[in-house]
Length: 389
Ligand SMILES: Cc1cc2nc3c(=O)[nH]c(=O)nc-3n(C[C@H](O)[C@H](O)[C@H](O)COP(=O)(O)OP(=O)(O)OC[C@H]3O[C@@H](n4cnc5c(N)ncnc54)[C@H](O)[C@@H]3O)c2cc1C
Image 1 (cartoon, rainbow, N blue to C red):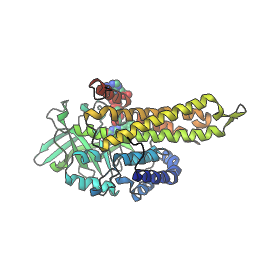
Image 2 (cartoon, rainbow, N blue to C red):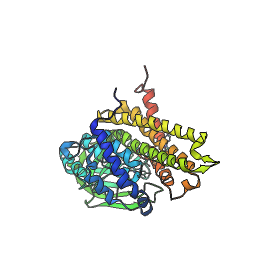
Image 3 (cartoon, rainbow, N blue to C red):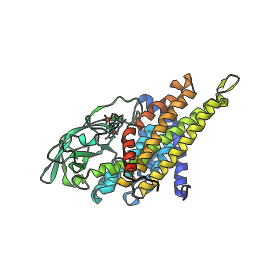
Image 4 (cartoon, rainbow, N blue to C red):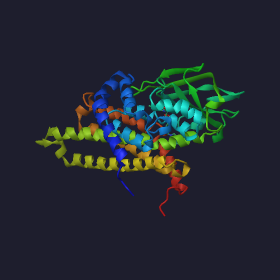
């Protein structure tokens, strides 16, 4: 067992740490206030080669894998979860294509993500189908060598900037069918007739990367746009399973950022003839959070290591879900306690704590809520996928 990052990963970590401190940190507050997409940061990430971290070298990426992306996102999320989401979106929609898509789909759609010439989004959720994915109503019907898609996706991160979408649709004759083989994944280009971005959401946090609706009206795509097999719903699940460490990284980075911010403040803030940091009650909160952050980091790094070994099928689910569940809950707890440590100041927009607090809550909802993760972990224990003898 080796707990040290490789030399390459250490170098990546220090490069991204510097970019996060010099470029991301000064922009975080402004991005939240304007809600405008930070194109400048996208270009910084592109120029530093960070958009292709999880993309193989033969597709123009750096092949740093899920571990590389996890480490980069952790650094960026210390200052901005919006910027961290921009990096995450290099993997969420491309995951199913890299896992099961044809070589042509990989060359035409994944490679341009690595060089920043294209952006993509992942379209699974629908107004009546969030956790209950099989409740989706978007339908794809075969017509010769084409498929015709109709439906509405919602809460889609990056929907406005995306050039193409990974869209999940029912390919069974009955749209209420709940068997897993009823759902198929497609690449849908933004510029196809019938593709429209609908309304965008007014979010409490992670502003700057819009979420919103994708409307599909009689959209025709060639059969070659099918990702993997017809009825390959497992793709959605395997794609999401392999994403767990990446979304967990947004949680650990946020928790680290919030705690570092609060610690610097309480060391300076005078009260009762000492500082807030001198109070044992505050010290215990700092210690508890530090321990929980480190526990979350270990779960997250292990999950990333597993995902890079291709261990994201059913039997590995509890280990992956545990990282997402725990790291994102720690982020919510840390953002809450750290805001509290600053008192009134923490509640004001002069400080980062209220932003961490608003951003953190997204993390326990997206890509499978905490409750859904707990269900998956429990199922793994009941099936002895996670067992201790
Ligand atoms: C900011 C943001 C960005 C998003 N980006 C994307 C995106 O890019 N692509 C995409 O496809 N989707 C995206 N989503 C949607 C997200 O994946 C869903 O919100 C999520 O899956 C939960 O679905 P829901 O909101 O419909 O909640 P519901 O499924 O309606 O759940 C409501 C509550 O009930 C709980 N619950 C549900 N089922 C169970 C159960 N079996 N046991 C116990 N509790 C349960 C949930 O945990 C939750 O607390 C995004 C959401 C947000 C907020």
